[in-house]
Image 1 (cartoon, rainbow, N blue to C red):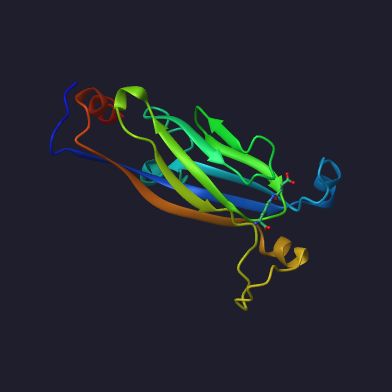
Image 2: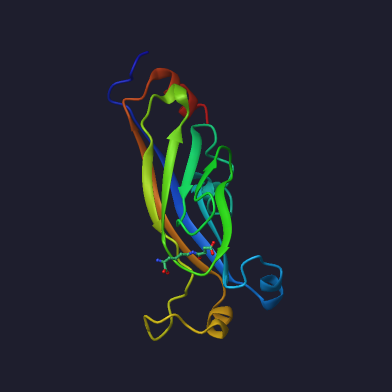
Length: 170
Ligand code: SLL
């Protein structure tokens, strides 16, 4: 296999989470009544933002990503969630914030090592006062969904010719 020296390919991504407060009706349906929020953690492409009005195209990473493994807090059953096709995301309910390890594995023909990101799951909104305390649920509901996203770029240096073909065919 041949590496293409001097070539660098960037693939912009966003990773992070959204969270909403559970309504009493939703809570009544849960196995764990102490859960307060529903959240989704995801890795999405950031490249399609320019030609669509959706920031983060859920379906535009599968051609070079083989798996995204989300490692949740140990209080969750089967805390490592392996997602093998887009959308690369996990939705859960819970009551607490914690750090999520996000491990991205590339297609075998890439010859690239896996990369790891860390995301602090954010459930609670920033309050106007800058108060570090968790706001009452009424306040949180009024403020609406919480969004916490990071922009980053996956960088491939000197890619294999076959992998470069895959990347540039897209
Ligand atoms: C905290 N350090 O104390 C964090 C831990 C754990 C969050 C948060 C639900 C787990 C379950 C859940 O939200 N765990 O009931 O299955 O804030």
